[in-house]
Image (cartoon, rainbow, N blue to C red; front, side, top):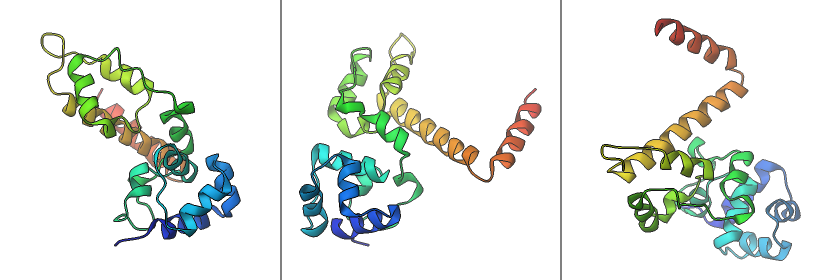
Length: 178
């Protein structure tokens, strides 16, 4: 289902119960800039797109992909706290601790850096394979992202109404493994 950016922005804004000026305030953008995106069907680019995605708590991929209709799926949503950690004050991530093959991988796949924090980079830098360097950076990055997603889902369940069910399951698994 193709959905224009204007429709997507209106739906997301209505979901939050915000007017246009509130979205602009939350995204730290001039009201005229935000209005151009919503009224004139202009797609945000660069830092403006990141700020709008953060404000609505959705991924940048979701925001800019016309094929992803409304509402956003669970994988398209990002908690506000997580979004703030992704690019705090638009600081670049320090990749200097990574092995060369990881640096090369991120250089040719910059979209894989989206959603990673400095802590994620440090964890990836700690992976060791046979002979020191892990051989397949794509495998390890994807594995790390899967783990982050699983942890985020667990956090959401722990904060939700099924908290006691998850705690009971975790207790059962831990007793079984002993």
